[in-house]
Image (cartoon, rainbow, N blue to C red; front, side, top):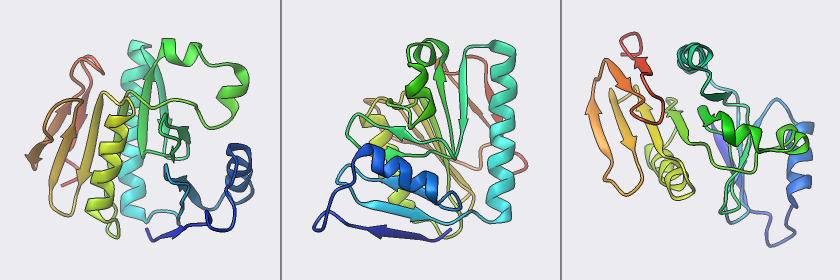
Length: 191
C-alpha cells in the first residue's frame, strides 16, 4: 500500500466535518489525519494483506459474538482521537458501554474516541517506523492493548500503557489478556 501525505495547513485547515465529507466523497481511498492536520492518503491493500486482515477480523468478531462484550470495527472505521488525529486501525474494539454512551449522530461519523484494542498489520510497502509511531499514538490516546503484526520480519510488537514494547518472534497465538478476556488470535497461517 502506498501512502501520500499532504500538508494543507499553510493554505487552509479542514474542519472535522469537511474531513469527514472528503472521506465520504473519495471512498476508494483510506484517509487519516495526523494531530498536526496532515492528510494521509492510502490506496487499497494487496491480496495477502486483505486476506490476513479478513482472517483477523473474523477471529475477533467470532469471539465478540460469543462474549457480547463490545463492538468490533474493521479498517474502514475512522476514530477521532483525543489529540485531534483521525485514525483507522486495521482492526479495533471497544467495550459495549463505550458504544452505548455514543449518540446516534456520533455513531454515524468518525467515532470521537480511541479504541481500547487496536491491531495494525504491516503491508509490504508500510514503513515499520511509521506504524510503530502510530501504535505509540494509540497508547498515548487511551488504547489499552495494541498489536503490530509484521509478517515481513515474522514478529509481533505488543503495546500496553506504561510498559515497554514486548516483541515476540514468530508467535503462534496472542492472548487478548484482560482487555479481550479469553480471546486468542491464531497466527499459524500468517507465517
